[in-house]
Amino acid sequence: MKIITDSIIDGREIGGPGTIVSINPATEEEVGTASSLDAEGAELAVQAAKEAFPGWAATPVEEREEILGRWLEIMVEEADEVAKLMSAEMGKPLSEAALVDVVPACSTLEYWQRIAHRELAFRPVEPELLLASHWDAGYRFDPLGVLTIITPWNYPVAIPMWELVPALVAGNTVVMKPASDTVLTGLLLADQARRAGMPPGVFNAVALPGRATDVLLDHPDVAKVLFTGSVEVGRHVARRCAERILPCQLELGGKDAAVVAADAPLDRTASGLVWAGFMNTGQSCASVERVYVVEELYDRLVRKMVALTTTLKVGDPTRRDTDLGPLANSGQRAEVAAQVDEALARGARALTGGEQPEDTGYFYPPTILVDVTDDMMVMHEETFGPVIPIVKVKDVDEGIRRANDSQFGLAASGWTRSKKLAERFQRELDAGAVGINEHGIVAAGEVTASWGGRRDSGIGRAHGSFGLHELVNIKYVFADDGAGSSSAWHYPYDEDFTTFITASVPVLYRKGFARYETLNDMASTRRFNERVRKIELLKNFKKLI
Image (cartoon, rainbow, N blue to C red; front, side, top):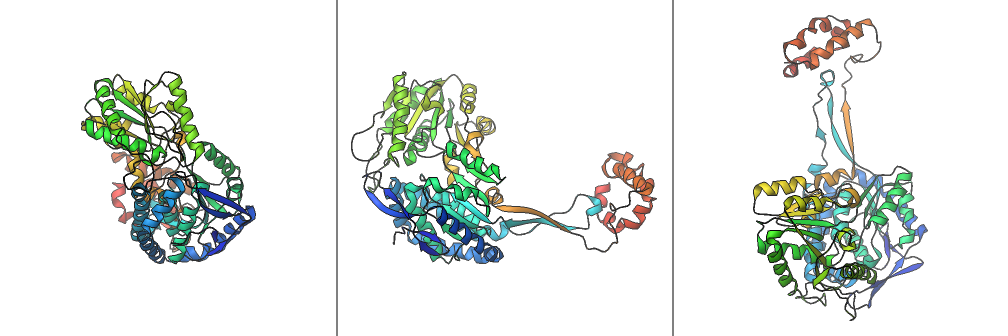
Protein backbone atom coordinates (compact mmCIF):
# COMPACT_ATOMS: atom_id res chain seq x y z
CA MET A 1 0.00 0.00 0.00
CA LYS A 2 1.38 3.36 -1.02
CA ILE A 3 1.81 5.94 1.75
CA ILE A 4 0.45 9.31 0.64
CA THR A 5 2.53 12.27 1.82
CA ASP A 6 0.90 15.12 -0.13
CA SER A 7 -2.50 16.69 0.33
CA ILE A 8 -5.22 15.45 -2.03
CA ILE A 9 -7.03 18.39 -3.60
CA ASP A 10 -9.34 18.13 -6.58
CA GLY A 11 -8.26 14.52 -7.00
CA ARG A 12 -4.56 15.44 -7.29
CA GLU A 13 -1.64 15.14 -4.87
CA ILE A 14 -0.41 18.63 -4.06
CA GLY A 15 2.59 19.50 -1.91
CA GLY A 16 3.17 22.59 0.17
CA PRO A 17 6.00 24.68 1.55
CA GLY A 18 6.24 23.00 4.95
CA THR A 19 6.54 19.55 6.50
CA ILE A 20 4.75 17.53 9.16
CA VAL A 21 6.85 14.70 10.57
CA SER A 22 4.93 11.66 11.83
CA ILE A 23 6.66 10.01 14.81
CA ASN A 24 6.10 6.45 16.01
CA PRO A 25 5.30 6.88 19.72
CA ALA A 26 6.54 3.38 20.56
CA THR A 27 9.99 3.80 19.01
CA GLU A 28 10.26 7.60 18.70
CA GLU A 29 11.38 7.01 15.11
CA GLU A 30 10.05 8.76 12.03
CA VAL A 31 7.15 7.05 10.25
CA GLY A 32 7.09 9.48 7.36
CA THR A 33 7.03 13.14 6.44
CA ALA A 34 4.02 14.86 4.91
CA SER A 35 4.32 17.97 2.80
CA SER A 36 2.20 20.56 4.59
CA LEU A 37 0.21 23.35 3.00
CA ASP A 38 -0.11 26.96 4.01
CA ALA A 39 -3.26 29.12 4.06
CA GLU A 40 -3.09 29.50 0.29
CA GLY A 41 -3.15 25.72 -0.14
CA ALA A 42 -6.12 25.43 2.20
CA GLU A 43 -7.90 28.08 0.15
CA LEU A 44 -7.29 25.98 -2.95
CA ALA A 45 -8.96 23.00 -1.29
CA VAL A 46 -12.06 25.00 -0.36
CA GLN A 47 -12.28 26.32 -3.91
CA ALA A 48 -12.08 22.80 -5.32
CA ALA A 49 -14.84 21.65 -2.97
CA LYS A 50 -16.98 24.65 -3.89
CA GLU A 51 -16.65 23.97 -7.61
CA ALA A 52 -17.41 20.27 -7.16
CA PHE A 53 -20.49 20.83 -5.01
CA PRO A 54 -23.19 21.51 -7.64
CA GLY A 55 -22.36 18.39 -9.63
CA TRP A 56 -22.04 16.18 -6.55
CA ALA A 57 -25.26 17.50 -5.02
CA ALA A 58 -27.06 16.69 -8.28
CA THR A 59 -25.63 13.15 -8.42
CA PRO A 60 -28.35 10.59 -7.61
CA VAL A 61 -27.91 9.24 -4.11
CA GLU A 62 -27.82 5.72 -5.51
CA GLU A 63 -24.64 6.59 -7.41
CA ARG A 64 -23.11 8.03 -4.26
CA GLU A 65 -23.98 4.79 -2.48
CA GLU A 66 -22.20 2.80 -5.18
CA ILE A 67 -19.00 4.75 -4.52
CA LEU A 68 -19.30 3.98 -0.81
CA GLY A 69 -19.69 0.32 -1.70
CA ARG A 70 -16.44 0.39 -3.66
CA TRP A 71 -14.74 2.27 -0.83
CA LEU A 72 -15.90 -0.48 1.56
CA GLU A 73 -14.30 -3.12 -0.66
CA ILE A 74 -11.02 -1.20 -0.59
CA MET A 75 -11.18 -0.71 3.19
CA VAL A 76 -11.75 -4.43 3.76
CA GLU A 77 -8.97 -5.39 1.33
CA GLU A 78 -6.51 -3.00 2.99
CA ALA A 79 -7.65 -3.52 6.59
CA ASP A 80 -4.32 -4.91 7.79
CA GLU A 81 -2.30 -2.15 6.14
CA VAL A 82 -4.61 0.54 7.53
CA ALA A 83 -4.24 -0.92 11.04
CA LYS A 84 -0.45 -1.02 10.69
CA LEU A 85 -0.23 2.60 9.57
CA MET A 86 -2.39 3.98 12.36
CA SER A 87 -0.56 1.78 14.88
CA ALA A 88 2.75 3.20 13.67
CA GLU A 89 1.47 6.77 13.85
CA MET A 90 -0.30 6.75 17.23
CA GLY A 91 0.67 3.52 18.99
CA LYS A 92 -2.61 1.61 18.98
CA PRO A 93 -2.12 -2.20 19.20
CA LEU A 94 -2.84 -3.82 15.85
CA SER A 95 -5.75 -5.91 17.11
CA GLU A 96 -7.27 -2.87 18.78
CA ALA A 97 -6.81 -0.79 15.63
CA ALA A 98 -8.89 -3.37 13.80
CA LEU A 99 -11.50 -3.48 16.59
CA VAL A 100 -12.08 0.22 17.27
CA ASP A 101 -11.12 1.86 13.97
CA VAL A 102 -11.35 -0.48 10.99
CA VAL A 103 -14.53 -2.27 12.06
CA PRO A 104 -16.48 0.97 12.78
CA ALA A 105 -15.22 2.42 9.48
CA CYS A 106 -16.44 -0.62 7.57
CA SER A 107 -19.72 -0.60 9.46
CA THR A 108 -20.24 3.07 8.62
CA LEU A 109 -19.58 2.50 4.92
CA GLU A 110 -21.77 -0.59 4.79
CA TYR A 111 -24.66 1.09 6.60
CA TRP A 112 -24.78 4.27 4.55
CA GLN A 113 -24.24 2.58 1.18
CA ARG A 114 -27.30 0.50 2.04
CA ILE A 115 -29.57 2.97 3.81
CA ALA A 116 -28.77 6.49 2.57
CA HIS A 117 -31.38 6.60 -0.21
CA ARG A 118 -34.11 5.83 2.33
CA GLU A 119 -32.88 8.30 4.95
CA LEU A 120 -32.53 11.07 2.35
CA ALA A 121 -35.80 10.39 0.54
CA PHE A 122 -38.57 12.99 0.54
CA ARG A 123 -40.69 12.53 3.65
CA PRO A 124 -44.35 13.49 3.09
CA VAL A 125 -46.26 15.12 5.93
CA GLU A 126 -49.99 15.71 6.11
CA PRO A 127 -50.73 19.29 7.22
CA GLU A 128 -52.58 19.66 10.49
CA LEU A 129 -54.00 23.06 9.54
CA LEU A 130 -57.36 22.26 7.94
CA LEU A 131 -57.26 25.26 5.66
CA ALA A 132 -53.99 23.89 4.24
CA SER A 133 -54.99 20.23 4.11
CA HIS A 134 -54.90 20.23 0.29
CA TRP A 135 -51.16 20.93 0.23
CA ASP A 136 -48.62 18.42 -0.95
CA ALA A 137 -46.14 18.90 1.88
CA GLY A 138 -43.15 17.26 3.47
CA TYR A 139 -39.43 17.40 4.14
CA ARG A 140 -36.45 17.43 1.84
CA PHE A 141 -32.96 16.67 3.12
CA ASP A 142 -30.64 18.75 0.97
CA PRO A 143 -26.85 19.02 1.28
CA LEU A 144 -25.42 22.07 3.01
CA GLY A 145 -22.44 22.71 0.74
CA VAL A 146 -18.74 22.66 1.62
CA LEU A 147 -18.01 21.16 5.05
CA THR A 148 -14.80 21.55 7.02
CA ILE A 149 -14.01 18.41 9.05
CA ILE A 150 -11.19 18.65 11.61
CA THR A 151 -10.32 15.24 13.03
CA PRO A 152 -8.32 13.99 16.05
CA TRP A 153 -5.44 11.56 16.39
CA ASN A 154 -6.94 9.11 18.89
CA TYR A 155 -9.25 7.36 16.39
CA PRO A 156 -7.72 8.43 13.08
CA VAL A 157 -9.97 6.20 10.96
CA ALA A 158 -13.21 5.65 12.89
CA ILE A 159 -13.96 9.26 13.82
CA PRO A 160 -13.27 10.77 10.38
CA MET A 161 -15.32 8.05 8.71
CA TRP A 162 -18.42 8.47 10.85
CA GLU A 163 -18.41 12.15 9.88
CA LEU A 164 -17.15 11.88 6.30
CA VAL A 165 -19.35 9.08 5.02
CA PRO A 166 -22.81 10.49 5.83
CA ALA A 167 -21.63 13.98 4.85
CA LEU A 168 -20.52 12.79 1.43
CA VAL A 169 -23.45 10.50 0.71
CA ALA A 170 -25.81 13.37 1.61
CA GLY A 171 -24.29 15.37 -1.25
CA ASN A 172 -21.90 17.66 0.62
CA THR A 173 -18.31 18.22 -0.42
CA VAL A 174 -15.57 18.11 2.21
CA VAL A 175 -12.25 19.59 3.16
CA MET A 176 -10.79 17.42 5.91
CA LYS A 177 -7.82 18.33 8.08
CA PRO A 178 -6.42 15.24 9.80
CA ALA A 179 -4.50 15.63 13.06
CA SER A 180 -0.78 16.20 12.59
CA ASP A 181 0.11 13.14 14.69
CA THR A 182 -1.83 10.88 12.29
CA VAL A 183 -1.62 12.90 9.11
CA LEU A 184 -0.57 9.95 6.94
CA THR A 185 -3.60 7.91 8.01
CA GLY A 186 -5.88 10.83 7.15
CA LEU A 187 -4.39 11.24 3.70
CA LEU A 188 -4.80 7.49 3.12
CA LEU A 189 -8.57 7.81 3.61
CA ALA A 190 -8.78 10.44 0.88
CA ASP A 191 -6.70 8.24 -1.42
CA GLN A 192 -9.04 5.30 -0.83
CA ALA A 193 -12.04 7.46 -1.66
CA ARG A 194 -10.30 8.67 -4.81
CA ARG A 195 -9.59 5.09 -5.88
CA ALA A 196 -13.22 4.19 -5.16
CA GLY A 197 -14.32 6.71 -7.77
CA MET A 198 -15.05 9.80 -5.68
CA PRO A 199 -15.11 12.68 -8.20
CA PRO A 200 -12.32 15.29 -8.03
CA GLY A 201 -12.96 18.02 -5.49
CA VAL A 202 -15.63 16.13 -3.56
CA PHE A 203 -13.32 14.92 -0.77
CA ASN A 204 -10.16 16.93 -0.20
CA ALA A 205 -7.69 16.10 2.58
CA VAL A 206 -5.17 18.75 3.59
CA ALA A 207 -1.96 18.32 5.55
CA LEU A 208 -2.10 21.57 7.46
CA PRO A 209 -0.37 22.80 10.64
CA GLY A 210 -2.71 23.90 13.39
CA ARG A 211 -1.80 27.57 13.05
CA ALA A 212 -3.15 27.59 9.49
CA THR A 213 -6.45 25.91 10.30
CA ASP A 214 -8.36 29.16 10.84
CA VAL A 215 -8.66 29.64 7.08
CA LEU A 216 -10.99 26.63 7.08
CA LEU A 217 -13.08 28.18 9.86
CA ASP A 218 -13.25 31.69 8.44
CA HIS A 219 -13.75 30.90 4.77
CA PRO A 220 -17.05 32.36 3.48
CA ASP A 221 -17.66 29.32 1.26
CA VAL A 222 -17.66 26.84 4.17
CA ALA A 223 -21.21 25.94 5.21
CA LYS A 224 -20.46 24.09 8.45
CA VAL A 225 -17.54 22.99 10.62
CA LEU A 226 -17.28 19.59 12.29
CA PHE A 227 -14.58 19.45 14.95
CA THR A 228 -13.46 16.66 17.25
CA GLY A 229 -10.80 17.45 19.83
CA SER A 230 -10.07 19.27 23.06
CA VAL A 231 -12.38 21.65 24.87
CA GLU A 232 -9.84 24.46 24.57
CA VAL A 233 -9.58 24.21 20.79
CA GLY A 234 -13.32 23.55 20.55
CA ARG A 235 -14.00 26.89 22.20
CA HIS A 236 -11.73 28.57 19.67
CA VAL A 237 -13.62 26.88 16.83
CA ALA A 238 -16.96 27.92 18.31
CA ARG A 239 -15.86 31.54 18.70
CA ARG A 240 -14.61 31.77 15.12
CA CYS A 241 -17.80 30.23 13.81
CA ALA A 242 -19.99 32.46 15.98
CA GLU A 243 -18.47 35.59 14.47
CA ARG A 244 -20.21 34.82 11.18
CA ILE A 245 -23.06 32.69 12.54
CA LEU A 246 -21.58 29.56 10.97
CA PRO A 247 -23.00 26.33 12.39
CA CYS A 248 -20.53 23.97 14.01
CA GLN A 249 -20.67 20.50 15.47
CA LEU A 250 -18.27 19.90 18.36
CA GLU A 251 -17.32 16.58 19.92
CA LEU A 252 -15.04 17.55 22.78
CA GLY A 253 -13.76 16.08 26.02
CA GLY A 254 -15.13 13.82 28.67
CA LYS A 255 -14.66 12.82 32.28
CA ASP A 256 -16.85 9.76 32.10
CA ALA A 257 -18.24 8.22 35.24
CA ALA A 258 -19.38 4.71 36.11
CA VAL A 259 -21.68 4.03 39.05
CA VAL A 260 -21.55 0.53 40.49
CA ALA A 261 -24.45 -0.76 42.60
CA ALA A 262 -24.18 -3.39 45.32
CA ASP A 263 -25.85 -6.00 43.12
CA ALA A 264 -23.55 -5.45 40.12
CA PRO A 265 -22.18 -8.62 38.48
CA LEU A 266 -18.65 -8.59 39.91
CA ASP A 267 -16.65 -10.26 37.15
CA ARG A 268 -18.53 -8.51 34.37
CA THR A 269 -18.14 -5.12 36.04
CA ALA A 270 -14.43 -5.49 36.68
CA SER A 271 -13.78 -6.67 33.14
CA GLY A 272 -15.91 -3.93 31.56
CA LEU A 273 -14.41 -1.10 33.60
CA VAL A 274 -10.81 -2.18 33.08
CA TRP A 275 -11.38 -2.38 29.32
CA ALA A 276 -13.28 0.91 29.09
CA GLY A 277 -10.65 2.68 31.18
CA PHE A 278 -7.52 1.37 29.49
CA MET A 279 -8.61 0.64 25.91
CA ASN A 280 -6.69 2.85 23.45
CA THR A 281 -4.34 3.53 26.39
CA GLY A 282 -7.12 5.61 27.90
CA GLN A 283 -7.02 8.07 25.01
CA SER A 284 -10.76 8.24 24.40
CA CYS A 285 -13.14 11.10 25.10
CA ALA A 286 -15.44 8.49 26.60
CA SER A 287 -12.92 6.47 28.62
CA VAL A 288 -13.97 5.58 32.16
CA GLU A 289 -12.17 8.23 34.21
CA ARG A 290 -14.19 8.07 37.44
CA VAL A 291 -15.69 5.01 39.15
CA TYR A 292 -18.12 5.34 42.08
CA VAL A 293 -18.72 2.06 43.90
CA VAL A 294 -21.17 1.48 46.75
CA GLU A 295 -19.35 0.48 49.91
CA GLU A 296 -20.78 -3.06 50.05
CA LEU A 297 -18.98 -4.01 46.83
CA TYR A 298 -16.04 -1.62 46.94
CA ASP A 299 -13.27 -3.83 48.36
CA ARG A 300 -14.12 -6.86 46.22
CA LEU A 301 -14.38 -4.84 43.01
CA VAL A 302 -11.10 -3.02 43.65
CA ARG A 303 -9.30 -6.32 44.24
CA LYS A 304 -10.77 -7.80 41.07
CA MET A 305 -9.87 -4.75 38.94
CA VAL A 306 -6.33 -4.68 40.31
CA ALA A 307 -5.90 -8.39 39.56
CA LEU A 308 -7.08 -7.91 35.98
CA THR A 309 -4.92 -4.83 35.45
CA THR A 310 -1.75 -6.62 36.55
CA THR A 311 -2.27 -9.16 33.75
CA LEU A 312 -2.30 -6.50 31.00
CA LYS A 313 0.70 -6.39 28.71
CA VAL A 314 2.13 -2.98 27.85
CA GLY A 315 4.60 -2.71 25.01
CA ASP A 316 5.21 -3.07 21.29
CA PRO A 317 1.86 -2.38 19.58
CA THR A 318 2.80 -4.61 16.65
CA ARG A 319 2.85 -7.72 18.85
CA ARG A 320 -0.34 -9.75 18.83
CA ASP A 321 -0.42 -10.11 22.63
CA THR A 322 -0.02 -6.41 23.49
CA ASP A 323 -2.95 -4.90 25.39
CA LEU A 324 -1.74 -1.30 25.73
CA GLY A 325 0.63 0.61 23.49
CA PRO A 326 2.20 3.98 24.20
CA LEU A 327 0.46 7.31 24.48
CA ALA A 328 0.36 9.12 21.16
CA ASN A 329 2.90 11.83 21.97
CA SER A 330 5.20 13.04 24.71
CA GLY A 331 2.95 15.94 25.62
CA GLN A 332 0.03 13.64 26.35
CA ARG A 333 2.19 11.42 28.55
CA ALA A 334 3.44 14.45 30.46
CA GLU A 335 -0.17 15.51 31.14
CA VAL A 336 -1.09 12.06 32.44
CA ALA A 337 1.99 11.88 34.63
CA ALA A 338 1.32 15.36 36.05
CA GLN A 339 -2.21 14.43 37.11
CA VAL A 340 -1.12 11.18 38.74
CA ASP A 341 1.85 12.78 40.49
CA GLU A 342 -0.37 15.53 41.89
CA ALA A 343 -2.88 12.98 43.20
CA LEU A 344 -0.17 10.87 44.83
CA ALA A 345 1.40 13.93 46.42
CA ARG A 346 -1.95 14.83 47.98
CA GLY A 347 -2.68 11.42 49.49
CA ALA A 348 -3.99 9.16 46.73
CA ARG A 349 -2.54 5.64 46.41
CA ALA A 350 -1.63 3.84 43.20
CA LEU A 351 -2.56 0.16 43.45
CA THR A 352 -1.09 -0.40 39.98
CA GLY A 353 1.20 1.74 37.85
CA GLY A 354 1.66 5.34 38.84
CA GLU A 355 5.25 5.78 37.63
CA GLN A 356 6.50 6.93 34.25
CA PRO A 357 8.98 4.47 32.74
CA GLU A 358 12.37 5.64 31.50
CA ASP A 359 12.53 3.42 28.41
CA THR A 360 12.15 4.54 24.79
CA GLY A 361 8.60 5.33 23.75
CA TYR A 362 5.79 7.32 25.32
CA PHE A 363 4.57 4.50 27.51
CA TYR A 364 2.66 4.84 30.77
CA PRO A 365 1.43 1.87 32.82
CA PRO A 366 -2.28 1.23 33.47
CA THR A 367 -2.88 2.91 36.81
CA ILE A 368 -5.60 2.37 39.41
CA LEU A 369 -5.90 5.09 42.04
CA VAL A 370 -7.78 4.99 45.34
CA ASP A 371 -8.15 7.48 48.21
CA VAL A 372 -8.73 10.23 45.66
CA THR A 373 -10.60 13.44 46.43
CA ASP A 374 -12.74 15.63 44.23
CA ASP A 375 -10.29 18.53 44.27
CA MET A 376 -7.52 16.49 42.60
CA MET A 377 -6.97 17.15 38.88
CA VAL A 378 -7.44 13.47 38.12
CA MET A 379 -11.03 13.73 39.34
CA HIS A 380 -12.23 16.81 37.50
CA GLU A 381 -9.95 17.40 34.48
CA GLU A 382 -9.85 15.12 31.47
CA THR A 383 -6.88 12.76 31.85
CA PHE A 384 -6.88 11.09 28.43
CA GLY A 385 -4.60 8.34 29.60
CA PRO A 386 -4.63 4.91 31.29
CA VAL A 387 -5.76 6.01 34.76
CA ILE A 388 -8.85 4.85 36.67
CA PRO A 389 -9.65 6.57 40.00
CA ILE A 390 -12.05 4.54 42.17
CA VAL A 391 -14.19 6.16 44.86
CA LYS A 392 -16.24 4.52 47.64
CA VAL A 393 -19.77 5.94 48.03
CA LYS A 394 -22.49 5.25 50.57
CA ASP A 395 -25.22 4.38 48.09
CA VAL A 396 -26.39 4.75 44.49
CA ASP A 397 -27.88 8.16 45.25
CA GLU A 398 -24.45 9.51 46.13
CA GLY A 399 -22.91 7.77 43.15
CA ILE A 400 -25.31 9.34 40.66
CA ARG A 401 -25.02 12.77 42.26
CA ARG A 402 -21.23 12.74 42.12
CA ALA A 403 -21.17 11.26 38.63
CA ASN A 404 -23.29 14.16 37.39
CA ASP A 405 -21.19 16.76 39.23
CA SER A 406 -18.96 17.51 36.24
CA GLN A 407 -18.62 20.06 33.48
CA PHE A 408 -18.58 17.13 31.06
CA GLY A 409 -21.35 14.79 29.95
CA LEU A 410 -20.30 12.57 27.05
CA ALA A 411 -20.97 9.00 28.19
CA ALA A 412 -21.62 7.12 31.42
CA SER A 413 -22.54 3.70 32.74
CA GLY A 414 -24.46 1.99 35.52
CA TRP A 415 -23.69 -1.50 36.73
CA THR A 416 -26.47 -3.58 38.28
CA ARG A 417 -28.56 -6.74 37.92
CA SER A 418 -31.76 -4.82 38.74
CA LYS A 419 -33.96 -3.78 35.84
CA LYS A 420 -35.53 -1.06 37.96
CA LEU A 421 -32.16 0.38 38.93
CA ALA A 422 -30.94 0.09 35.33
CA GLU A 423 -33.85 2.25 34.20
CA ARG A 424 -32.98 4.76 36.91
CA PHE A 425 -29.36 4.91 35.74
CA GLN A 426 -30.49 5.50 32.17
CA ARG A 427 -32.87 8.23 33.28
CA GLU A 428 -30.70 10.07 35.80
CA LEU A 429 -27.12 9.82 34.55
CA ASP A 430 -26.65 13.09 32.67
CA ALA A 431 -24.74 12.16 29.51
CA GLY A 432 -25.18 11.68 25.78
CA ALA A 433 -24.91 7.89 25.98
CA VAL A 434 -25.55 5.65 28.99
CA GLY A 435 -24.80 1.94 29.08
CA ILE A 436 -25.87 -0.70 31.57
CA ASN A 437 -23.24 -3.32 32.42
CA GLU A 438 -21.18 -1.90 29.55
CA HIS A 439 -19.73 1.58 29.44
CA GLY A 440 -21.22 4.20 27.12
CA ILE A 441 -18.05 4.28 25.02
CA VAL A 442 -19.23 1.13 23.22
CA ALA A 443 -22.03 3.16 21.60
CA ALA A 444 -19.39 5.03 19.61
CA GLY A 445 -18.89 1.88 17.55
CA GLU A 446 -22.59 1.49 16.71
CA VAL A 447 -23.48 3.36 13.55
CA THR A 448 -27.15 3.83 14.51
CA ALA A 449 -26.39 5.15 18.01
CA SER A 450 -26.37 8.93 18.26
CA TRP A 451 -23.09 10.23 19.64
CA GLY A 452 -22.49 13.54 21.34
CA GLY A 453 -22.36 15.13 24.75
CA ARG A 454 -23.63 17.69 27.18
CA ARG A 455 -22.02 20.87 28.49
CA ASP A 456 -18.25 20.96 27.80
CA SER A 457 -18.49 17.65 25.96
CA GLY A 458 -19.77 19.42 22.89
CA ILE A 459 -22.62 20.41 20.61
CA GLY A 460 -24.57 18.26 18.18
CA ARG A 461 -24.78 14.56 17.38
CA ALA A 462 -23.08 12.12 15.03
CA HIS A 463 -24.18 8.68 13.77
CA GLY A 464 -27.50 7.44 12.49
CA SER A 465 -30.45 9.58 11.50
CA PHE A 466 -29.79 12.25 14.13
CA GLY A 467 -26.23 12.60 12.90
CA LEU A 468 -27.39 12.80 9.30
CA HIS A 469 -29.71 15.66 10.20
CA GLU A 470 -26.65 17.66 11.32
CA LEU A 471 -25.30 17.40 7.77
CA VAL A 472 -28.31 18.46 5.71
CA ASN A 473 -30.70 21.36 5.33
CA ILE A 474 -33.97 19.97 6.67
CA LYS A 475 -36.23 21.84 4.30
CA TYR A 476 -40.01 21.90 4.72
CA VAL A 477 -41.64 22.22 1.30
CA PHE A 478 -45.28 22.54 0.32
CA ALA A 479 -47.27 23.09 -2.85
CA ASP A 480 -50.73 24.53 -3.44
CA ASP A 481 -52.30 23.38 -6.70
CA GLY A 482 -53.22 26.99 -7.49
CA ALA A 483 -56.84 26.10 -8.25
CA GLY A 484 -58.40 28.83 -6.13
CA SER A 485 -58.06 32.50 -6.94
CA SER A 486 -57.14 33.28 -3.31
CA SER A 487 -56.48 31.42 -0.08
CA ALA A 488 -58.77 31.86 2.88
CA TRP A 489 -56.20 33.99 4.70
CA HIS A 490 -55.37 36.38 1.86
CA TYR A 491 -56.44 40.04 1.95
CA PRO A 492 -58.69 41.87 2.46
CA TYR A 493 -59.09 41.88 6.25
CA ASP A 494 -62.67 43.11 6.30
CA GLU A 495 -65.66 42.60 8.63
CA ASP A 496 -66.59 39.37 6.90
CA PHE A 497 -63.09 37.97 7.39
CA THR A 498 -63.11 39.01 11.06
CA THR A 499 -66.35 37.09 11.59
CA PHE A 500 -64.95 34.09 9.72
CA ILE A 501 -61.67 33.79 11.63
CA THR A 502 -63.26 34.58 15.01
CA ALA A 503 -65.87 31.86 14.53
CA SER A 504 -63.31 29.39 13.16
CA VAL A 505 -61.16 29.27 16.30
CA PRO A 506 -63.77 27.55 18.51
CA VAL A 507 -64.79 25.21 15.66
CA LEU A 508 -61.22 24.07 15.19
CA TYR A 509 -59.94 23.93 18.74
CA ARG A 510 -62.68 23.71 21.36
CA LYS A 511 -63.47 20.35 22.91
CA GLY A 512 -66.83 18.61 22.90
CA PHE A 513 -70.11 19.99 21.61
CA ALA A 514 -69.08 23.55 22.52
CA ARG A 515 -66.95 23.65 19.39
CA TYR A 516 -70.07 23.73 17.18
CA GLU A 517 -71.63 26.82 18.78
CA THR A 518 -70.04 29.13 16.22
CA LEU A 519 -70.26 26.75 13.25
CA ASN A 520 -73.17 28.59 11.63
CA ASP A 521 -71.43 31.95 12.06
CA MET A 522 -68.37 30.61 10.26
CA ALA A 523 -70.33 28.87 7.50
CA SER A 524 -72.44 31.95 6.77
CA THR A 525 -69.52 34.16 5.86
CA ARG A 526 -68.58 35.05 2.31
CA ARG A 527 -64.98 34.07 3.06
CA PHE A 528 -66.01 30.51 3.95
CA ASN A 529 -68.26 30.06 0.97
CA GLU A 530 -65.90 31.54 -1.62
CA ARG A 531 -62.45 30.46 -0.46
CA VAL A 532 -62.67 27.36 1.76
CA ARG A 533 -62.44 24.02 -0.03
CA LYS A 534 -65.42 22.08 1.29
CA ILE A 535 -64.24 18.76 -0.13
CA GLU A 536 -61.06 19.05 1.95
CA LEU A 537 -63.13 19.59 5.08
CA LEU A 538 -65.08 16.42 4.33
CA LYS A 539 -61.85 14.47 3.81
CA ASN A 540 -60.68 15.64 7.23
CA PHE A 541 -64.02 15.28 8.95
CA LYS A 542 -62.49 13.23 11.79
CA LYS A 543 -60.45 16.24 12.87
CA LEU A 544 -63.67 18.20 13.30
CA ILE A 545 -65.33 15.60 15.48
